[in-house]
Amino acid sequence: MVWEVPVVAADLGGRVALVTGAGRGLGEAHARELARAGATVVVNDFGVDINGDAPDFAVAERVAAAIRADGGKAVAETSDIASFAGATGAVEHTVAEFGRIDILVNNAGIIGAGSALDSITQDELERLLAVHTVGTVGAIAAALPHMRRAGFGRIINTTSEASLATDIAAGAAYAAAKSAVWGITMSASKEAGAGITVNAVSPGALTRMSEGFLLESGIPDGLDLSPVQVSRVVVALCTEEAGRFTGRVPHTAGGFVREYVLRRRDDTDLAEYLREQLLL
Image (cartoon, rainbow, N blue to C red; front, side):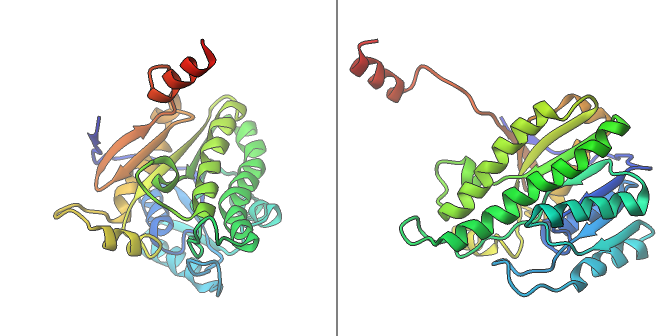
């Protein structure tokens, strides 16, 4: 089933949010929408390109300045979250600046070379895992003690249809990294504690990372794949009202949303074949 995402007037006044990879694309849209909903936003971005190279610290300040110009509250933060030290630094900067962290959006990511499985290098795999998985786990680990003391927290991770859908081919390293985010989300949702939710979004949006694939595969006429459509879902998951949802993975694209659910089934052709072979 597919549901259209309504425009909701979320109130995040008094909340402090850290958004990683917020200097461009989806992260920038998340930061702006969270600020528009009243949250104080820490705009984290190391400023690298889609392959993880050429850092530019100015991108984080540009977004923070734009939020302030619109009447919101924001500061820039330039830690490289591809290590526990960097991810922890971003969280601690947030707490040092504002005394708390209520919302953590793990958005930072790179796409890498997209190498096929038989040509991937260890360096490519490790770089992708560092940003997507080490960064996500490191930031969650640093944020949870603060959220537990406050009795409130909203953690939003970022996975991808590249790892969730069987009809989308992706580089093995990217698919592995994004698949790991699913597992991290499920585990963290059980460990987080009272008042803290952990969910992941699977975004469909036209950004510098996705434009090559999306433009090649074709975008249906009239489908709005602007990042803000995804950000509306992120904001909705950060509200008080969303406290009953945790360990969930909505996919959203073009103003519509569906949910990925991992199910164990006994009525598949593979299950039947194996039962026959094993005489079960």
